[in-house]
Image (cartoon, rainbow, N blue to C red; front, side):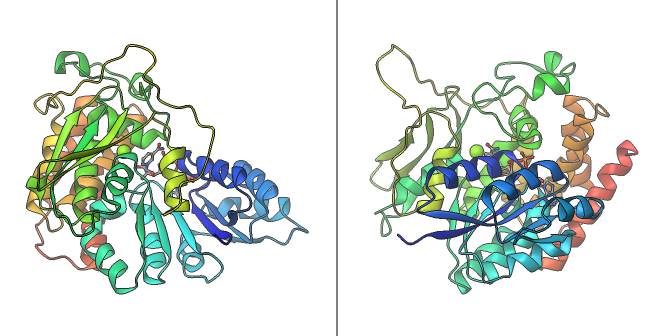
Length: 385
Ligand code: NAD
Ligand code: MG
């Protein structure tokens, strides 16, 4: 395998940092070519000095001068602003994009990479939730490989290797249940930000941690899976598996179920996406069967965790509905993280926004951007952000 040139979009985030760890462990295979960050200039500078990429982007333009000055005299180009993300994504100097930006902001650069025929390791699930039809179509047209990084989707992808001609009967997405598994509304009503950020099995960025606590994350993942694996909504089942050892499963038409297992560690799906189809030797801790332990499987409690139900309905309705769901959820999580609304109020906000925004059955990319803006404005108006 020749050295792959990696562009990390969102290098200062949880996925981005772990991608750099994988690069550092395999310098003969990978080189960091582009790093981008929203506003954490000090970490971006530190990463740039260590990995010596060809270029960096800092989205927050007020930080440009600081980054530029810190990298003076180094052969590293520095760009700033949101448009720079797209411009850099269109460049020839890289082979593989790690799409590690969080939220709707990841859509444009990821789409640009796909339009340029790049291989994309997709962590940014919101891209497919919002515009999965368009992104997958463009990937096909431009022969851009989209390799999932989300652990559940990586598991399904791994189960499908060698099964090209065997149709999927259904997929079983596993959910840890998050920090409030088994809790009821009378408990959730008082939940605060810091508690919700404590995930039992995974350490992740703030937004996905809250999404995991509300089960919206699993709802977004159902929609993500639908596009990645070209499935109908009824072929996607969610099962609560609190230990996060089985990362997801595929059931084929003969009834056989394949599962992918391992300790919860995002570096594994990150590395798998980067090296695919090769598996790289590493020393990550292994899951063993030495100690007595149990793997459990339960139905999700969608009456308490209504976000999962809302997401399922949005997936079934299709059109611009998942885009509305995503936008309202981003505003809700933002407000919850700032202690502006309560845990259960996030669901109410999403529900009201879903009722308000006009339905479009087959949206264009422009429609998705308009829908996103309208849904955000409406959701924000409900809480006077
Ligand atoms: P994070 O908050 O830790 O990092 C987000 C990164 O995106 C940062 O580098 C930040 O600078 C950048 N960013 C944020 N807003 C931006 C904007 N408006 N424009 C440009 N850049 C921006 O998030 P994360 O946990 O690393 O998650 C990233 C994505 O990966 C999310 O879509 C998440 O759902 C997905 N994902 C994460 C994990 C995980 O373990 N962290 C697992 C599965 C999927
Ligand atoms: Mg996941």
